[in-house]
Image (cartoon, rainbow over all chains, first blue to last red; front, side, top):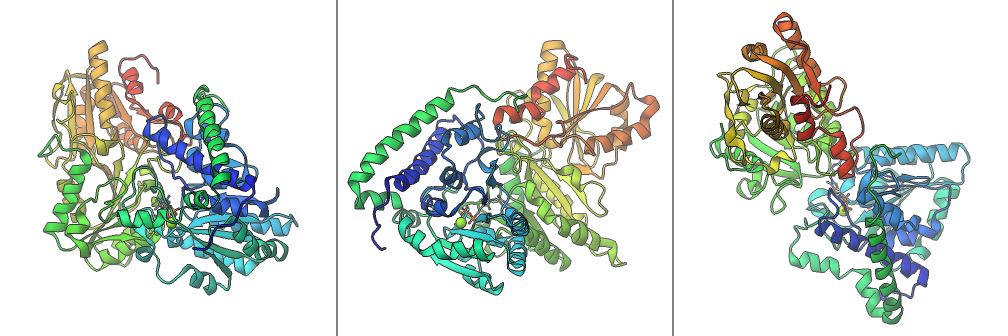
Length: 300
Length: 339
Ligand SMILES: Cc1ncc(C[n+]2csc(CCOP(=O)(O)OP(=O)(O)O)c2C)c(N)n1
Ligand SMILES: [Mg+2]
């Protein structure tokens, strides 16, 4: 693994903010203060943070079950998302959608795998037709390439040349099923089959990723040229909560790619300074949101 | 009644699947993340792949293909049992179920047996949110060559699965996710208060009653609601001495109500409770059947209990408000709530 380069305080803070949010969520579950389901993006936080400067106000992000990081990298709104998950006042979607179903202008997520791929094509088609400056950015996991609708959408995107960025978070596993057991061939080969451009990203370094993707992502927008960006990444936490059936060796192999530990080791001074603050802020946010009243049945 | 009442419903189901795989080499079990050590999202398939590796297969996230592959296996005389991780995603299987598997039984002029079961973990009250909590039974009613069954604490799953696989056409099997964690009837605290048995010789209709044989209320409900209804019956009896009999069919559709006629006419009020949201429901169809057959001998029209036609909220307290709870049912049995 190449050494990480130094991040701006703002970027590191964005990463840490997502990390501490996700940790707090798992702790709240452990303490029984929230129920239901959640999927944390521990280990994958750097992906939406790396992409965030590429997004403009006209863009639409379509996210999935593992979407907290996608949301928080776009909006500085940990309290609104937490309130949504906790069913408390100030929730982004009135407590109706929960962890997997978030919507506000520029962002929409759903917990049904693959569902938003064609929706993204439709949105992008309209952006192109109306001369909007926007593009659609859809996040999907490796496992979601099992859904047929993904291919129907990819075909249309390429056929109609719409401004669509498909971000694949290939963490090598789908719930409990390893990549080798769920996908024949490769994601690259599949994109190629539709004549769609594909770029593979193996770096965890936000600076490096941005340099690599700046030009091709600009082309998605300017030339209405769909692009698949596949991140080789690692899920260092459970699929949901307490349901990691991987053996110890596999878990450790994933943890070895944790940007958090790697960055801490490389830039300890900056890391300590920001990490402690973020940790405290997030704990304060949890305390504040936990103290809010539950959403009433008749609240909008 | 099940052989081992202290067994949890999911364990009873797991044992049924193991028994089927063991006694019949035509049986396959397929679904997402079902192999060990994970053993399925709700652990209904735990231990099966270790024991029957060739016939217990995890699939990619491909519900359409999952149902279609089951159709292909069934076409060749095999007996696939598929698990749709959350029944909400059975919408992605719908074409294969409606337009292939069930159609094929009679669409080609001579009968083609299509033995397959689509297992559907369903229902709410777990805070899983709008796309992971639905009860979609009603969307599978009135389809030629398709039967709908539901997991129940009264019905031993080995018997039910054998029955489903003998029908010669596809079956839907809905499984309430909260019921998984409950014990089979007789094993939960308070169960001993009830008299119970089966209404019919086929043992499709289980019943449990308090204060019979002449009761104030008869509640017909699928297995997923039975735990909530039983709690409501106990509370209504203790608080107001309201007497109620519960009837739980294993096969929900199609349903021959003939065995229920004596019970339906010897009761004050008949209720049908279900978890599907209002509109075009199983209960509405069943009530119509009861009305058509017994209009003049009923003491009043059959009443339906179900959630309003709304999206199921993720937040637990909002979800509880929308979905039927034991307290809601108790209130109608004691006359506190007008319907
Ligand atoms: C249509 C559909 N089928 C099944 C599921 C259940 N499910 C939720 S996440 C998941 C695994 C997704 O794997 P992947 O796409 O690799 O994303 P990851 O969880 O690794 O981020 C599954 C099977 C679902 N949400 N939607
Ligand atoms: Mg994955």
